[in-house]
Amino acid sequence: MRIVTWNINSLRLRLPLLERLCGEIQPDIVCLQETKVTDDLFPLEAVRALGFDHVCFRGMKSYNGVAILSRMPIRVLPDMPDWCSRGDCRHIAVACGAGDDPIILHDFYVPAGGDIPDPVENPKFAHKLAFVDEARAWFAARDLRRTVVVGDLNIAPLEQDVWSHRQLLKIVSHTPEETSRLLAWQESGFVDAMRHFVPPEEKLYTWWSYRNRNWSMSNRGRRLDHVWVTPDLVPDLRAMSVLRSARDWDKPSDHVPVMVELEAGE
DNA sequence: ATGGTTGATGCTCAA
Image: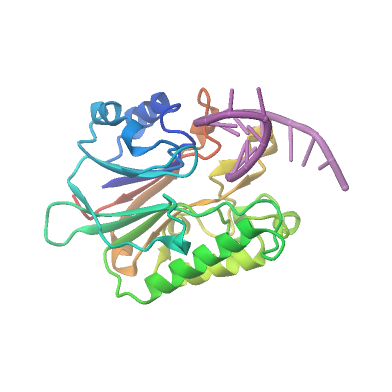
């Protein structure tokens, strides 16, 4: 089972890129963030035409929005928390597969947190920290198995997840307040599936700012997008790839797709 | 220290 996570930064604008992604790597499941489309305007027919007969989404006007596109049956998990009581569309979760032992898949879009890394001065940063704390507590209180967490978590936790650890320590996405919280959430029951394949000593990025024309040459990237699995799924991990080439597609997202292949759930 | 770009929306905000 090939699972892709991608902050697509407007689904409607980038439908041709989604089509290209599907042609190149044929994912079974695509988890999107920042769809930026309300549910009544979701491009369901275009998504079905790509072979995804099973689709769920939660969107809002202009901001946020998540969607899961699947070739196999999925069912949305009910009674998920309204994180930080915002009514934001930042999370959707499904059970994948028709069998009686499905894979549970959570798709998250964690708040970016604004520019100032101070929760007193910057309410958006406070929201981000609270969101991650709440997620950690929720998962820590549960017995997890056959569970995958993916999404744009908007935090690059390791030193080699950013182009310069030293220069980014006070930049939102890599402050110790964020990285310690994200790792605490991860350690509540998950293994970092990307780092299962790429050792922590190696640079690994999934996002390059639009504000850098020559993004590839300067390569000032960050790993903001993640795939975590519960330990019982680690033996099923088969492959991982970061589709760096997608950053150079026509009208690209600033995030590139990340693919993880699992033996499970066939 | 600063500015750099993009998307959705509509005379600006979020990223």
